[in-house]
Amino acid sequence: MQVKETQNEGLKRGYEFTLPAADLAAQVDAKLKEAQPEVEMKGFRKGKVPMALLKKQFGQRVLGDAMQEAIDTALRNHLEKSGDRPAVQPKIEMVNGESWKEGDDVVVTVAYEALPAIPETDLSGVELERLVVEASEEQVTEALENLAKNVQNFEDRKKGTKAKDGDQIVIDFKGMVDGEAFEGGTAEDYPLVLGSKSFIPGFEEQLVGAKAGDEVKVEVKFPEDYGHPTLAGKDAIFETTVKAVKAPKPAEIDDELAKKFGAESLDALKGQIRERLEAEYNGASRQVLKRALLDKLDELVKFDLPESLVEAEANQIAHQLWHEEHPEEHGHNHGEIETTDEHKSLAERRVRLGLLLAEIGQKAEITVSDQEMTQAVMRQARQFPGQERAFFEFIQQNPQAQQQLRAPIFEDKVVDHIVEGAKVAEKTVTKDELEKAIEALDQL
Image (cartoon, rainbow, N blue to C red):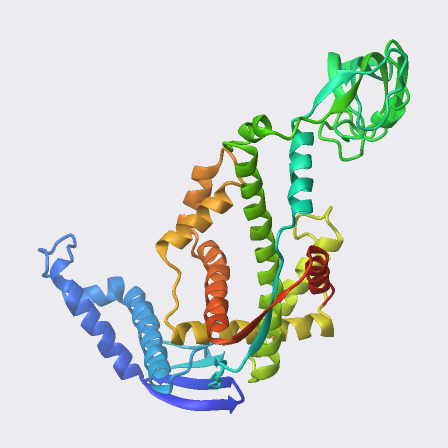
């Protein structure tokens, strides 16, 4: 195989591989000879089929296999010798493919972008700030009060009291569309908390101010995207009778409340709440720290980027943002989405940081363990209740899906590795200050 360089500009590489016809023919003969002892054909004993007949019967197929194998081997040898790592799958084209005939040399062009060499960078001097928030007594108390509301009871209000948001009303109702009752539109003694938005828009609002014994004709319109197509967009009337109006009564904050949430005592529940709150604060703080680290790395390390990776990332960003702006579009039956300079700038940052973190992780021999992958799969599977087995099978059979789960785990482990060697100062802040820092991340 002869190799001639045709392009070497920046990260772009181009080569012309020539496989002499004589070498290809010898390779075909060798493959046929290797297979000959196992070939059976009518009129011949096993292993005794003449080579000429084998070549006539199987020559074209073996020729194609030999060509592909020769090209793959040549490319593999070239990459090992050059040390190049293609950013994406190399583009391989056969010269004069349509006019090529057996007996001609095989000439193919190979083009790719090489991944850049990542410069050695001393990260030990990186300075970072970790925001620290301690859960206050007020925050623990607020969380306790919210728990008490979640298990609240309702007590009858005085006769004649008007219902307000937060109250529970007990109602009988019968819904009708075009004067006809519809399936699922009737109930008795239904407990409805006003303001819970558990009914279609406009229903609960019309019952605010109602008293026990009142009969209210609730007029609403089903949303256009309502789950039952026969009702979607239809006007409806609900004949409603209010049977009781009840006021919310939060549970007492005591040991009994704690036991309802699996704690032995109120003090134990407070401890659990404090730990949960501080775990949430630590998670938010880590987001701020990680963004600060990535910003510093982006400024600290510069190198050429493969245009193919940047273009693919920019297209993905544009596509994702377009769908966020058009949530009603779930498929891909839309026109071409153009990328902007802003998309390209963000793509360059992501590609640069992705390559840098990959290089740092590789040198530090950071890997994602089977146990970490299993935990990630289990977390994702919980989002598909009842379909966990199907999800597991999908992940097992889909290397790309596995990589999508592995990549963020690997990235976080590399970030932790860098942070361990950096100079990190802790700064105690309030919950509000931490929230502002998180909000600022979304604005960047």
